[in-house]
Length: 166
Image (cartoon, rainbow, N blue to C red):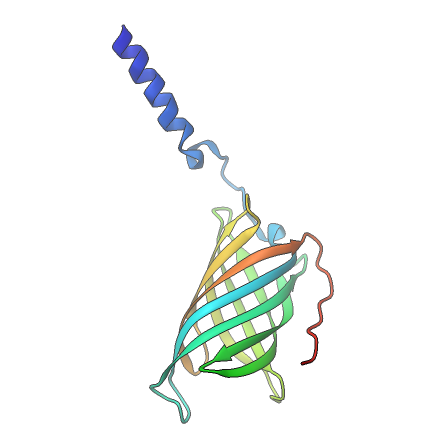
């Protein structure tokens, strides 16, 4: 009898330590991304075109993005690639599944460039409990990206954002 009680107690402790089994499905969705978010990224990229083709450079960056009620986002940022600093504006879409996985698709317009560069794609995992997401780059124009980003909520409201001039 004592063995049954011990095994039952151990089973309850194991089950209590497995929150994914206790949480109801459908806990995530695009509406949870609505708001204002900070983005920090770091990694590397290998250029596939232009004079730097074949070269690999470190990448770091920060941005602030605003996600609206339809999953569209915009925002300013700064990226440093191989020591070269560029301010930019980004715009795109975010899709989050009920299982808390997702994808970001966006274009980046570097300050002084006449047109945005489309074709950036990142896979994402959203953590609704901590109001953050992590992403991994899977596609970038003219480069093989190898960076990860951490995205943290600043506000539940999609607020206007500006980037100060340097």
